[in-house]
Image (cartoon, rainbow, N blue to C red; front, side, top):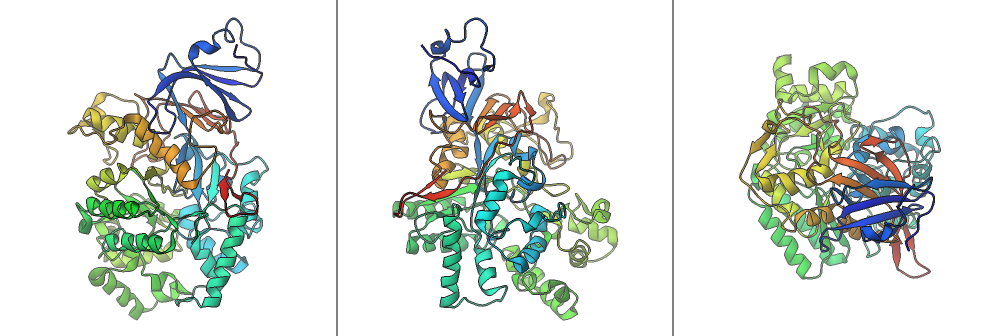
Length: 571
């Protein structure tokens, strides 16, 4: 007879989506004990143990004979929570949408490994992504190496830990900065060897990616998502062919008019490489607009200058930049010429600019200032110390849908959480996959999250628009859940997460299959998801009966060498 112990958590008669994508949903009772999934059994197995008064200290969650669904916690394959996990430790944006593990250190630049000089510049360079906290005074003094940074994550700033689990990628940009600084030149053989040494040490300290070998995966921010995007993807795939590295194409989008209808071309190229034996995976976010910093639109030669402000104060250099924007298309704009009507200001660090800029397109701000849009762009860069964030309205729905169907696809929010008016993907990515793309479109309805009238409440049916029914995930909700759980765990090679399986870590989400959806919109982006009843991180309730608990049971997920050989595991 099954027995229960004090401290057990019982999900009684839940519909289980186990994360594999191949096992059909089934009804079972799941017992969590001491942070792990202890048992999964037929609901009747626990009948005797649950008769009469429940023992003190045992939590039983009645899942209403399968109405409530239990799945693994969602794994965010592209997160910008490098500092948010520390300076905003409740981390509601991710916890309330069911994210239990995040992969950080993205896009080739982060806060480790580093030194004093590099840290000062990096803090300013990516303040738009992560903020630039001044308190406590020693915030950025607590680490320089990857190992030290991971140790700080494990404890949090106050010794209470972090809300989600975190896996860290070694940023290639940091390796270059530590070796040759910001010089625009090729590295020497000696400098390349030094980069390899730093990378090796960082992997030994627990980072899970950015490797040129087979021990970890390579997650590049490729050169372009606009003009030249197909060629940029081809470059990364060829690199994987030549080196044997496992390749993960992060935020694998195809944007701008150049790429309408080209998703099939990209996927064909990926499939041919996979057939050759190249290990490729990818992640996307389920939205059309992108989000980044305003400064990232500058040409690389300007943004990487030792004194970018001096460049912008030089009339001759400004004319050169303007020519690139209007005629050539700078690399900071992925080779596409710029349409200021498509660039919306999402956040500013200088609060004096908020009313004049947030939620407005560059062209609108320029009109209100009675000046050219390019001049407004330069003014705002200077006025906000290069820290403004933007929404770029450049996505193509057909491409988004086709790419997310791919069997090597995973989910990644790419969420910037510190912005005043952030992209809603930071709060809504994972419930949007299950609700909008996994359920609603197949039923011929679509909720408008873009227009000002978008309703964020649990309102009437009129908030949905009637659309042509389309099934995105032919394997049903089982397949959709797999994209967000088991599949990303396999990419990162986590040995005990990503599945509802006995002896696996109890990272779990309890949700209503008919009610789960994103409530975050472009008008009100900081809105928690609907339809999520509970979230467990390492067996502790981060969300309980729909309410955040403030628990911080997350930990770093580190790559470890097994014995003295070349075999590695992540856990």
